[in-house]
Image (cartoon, rainbow, N blue to C red; front, top):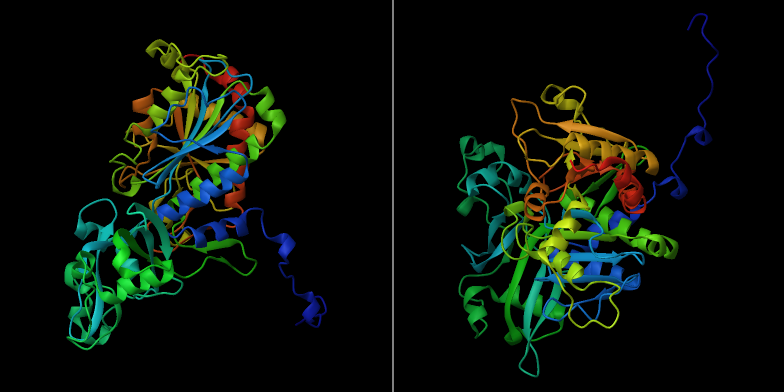
Amino acid sequence: MGGGQPTKDFREDDVVSLDEDAVPEYAEEFCTFIDECVTTYHACEFFKRELTQAGYVEIKERESWVPTLKAGGKYFVTRNTSSIIAFAIGEQYSPGNGFALITSHIDALCMKVKPVSRANKDGFDRIAVAPYAGGGASQSFDGSFSTWWDRDLGLGGRVLIKGGDGKILQKLVCLPKPVARIPSLAAHFGEPAKGPFNYEINMVPITGLTAAGTEEAVPTTMGKQHSTRLLKAVAKELGVSVLDIVDFDLELFDKTPCCLLGFDSEFISAPRIDDKLCSFAAMTALINATSDDSFLGKSGIVSIVGCFDMEEVGSALRAGAKSNFMQTVMERIVEAQIGAEGDDVSPYTTELFGITAANSFMISADVNHAYNPDFDGIYLEGAKPMLNKGVVIACDPNAHFTTTAPSIAFARTVAELSEVETQLFQIRNDSRSGGTVGPMLSERLGVPAIDLSICQLSMHSIRAMTGAKDPGFGIKYLEGFFRHYQTVFGIVQQDY
């Protein structure tokens, strides 16, 4: 090779391999969470279990909280079993002090089983579904759901069962294997394979083969609406009779497990990243911070996380961020007059809640777009977030995000104290911005806020990817938000 350094024989022990100790913190825990939390109901149940193990006490909306909530206590409440709010009250808290809020969402794009799902045709068992996503049906399928062709789909959700005492009980179900697939049309057929498609008839998942007229219907109302095989599969998994199934909310989802990806496992490939990622980071951060007795002992604030359903379809209904869920929880915490010993009823006032809101700060935590090198020209220079680099401050002057100059100062101060890098994201003027739960909650609650994200690629695809270090960065930053809140609030917030 003429004058170069002598070549060295390649040996197997020259290979640099990634051992288990090199896997970034929380990467495997996040993958476990994703694989278990196949629906919003499963995610809510997962958080309930983790919070209970960390010493949190479940409270019910229909019960009085005044005699229950105490300074130094840790609590959680759910709504519709698909949204959850958890909070810890500092031992030094007094009414009027602020709330350190993190809000996110735990719903994800999926296909909901229709109330009448029988769709068998010409010997094929099929299941009728509807897209769960924002926008019109055509827009949803052409965009987000174009990635759902040729995927192995699982089935899960919540099922209402008639108990032996006549009461209706809820059970969660997730069938153990893939049960459906939406086959694409081979390119050999020419123009019909290119679309446009009628997604009501061209994208119906196939679940099996049954000769016409051979299926014996279940003699119930549900048996008229759904196939016998679907009902039997759900009943078998739950260990109940098909006759006891009253109704259900079921959905199809990507059944393929998460995995680390890349030559050195730099990435996580997973379904449902939007937004199981930020909700996982937020709830883990809360548990980490509030498991430290010294933190709770010195804290004069309420540390609170809200993970909402319905975000992908507009955040409406009683479980969405537009509802009164977060506002009611905050008002009831203030109304309980933490530390007022012996009071059964406390003198709650709008004045007191107004002071509380002004002393509070909210992080709206939702995933954002990472830089994709194959589409370099669509990103704003200087605002192209990278995977495995840090959290992302999302900006938009048209109020799709809550970020302002004072809130950026707040977020960067938290980052410095937490030793986590921040990046910026803003959409170009010739592109369309998405939105988060942040603006609607900030408007309703009157709290200053920022949109702060963990970035990902392939947003709204059936399967996306994030950096293997990114769950850990998110948890470290959000835990720092709770731990350093009182210090940072005193530095930055000057009645902006």
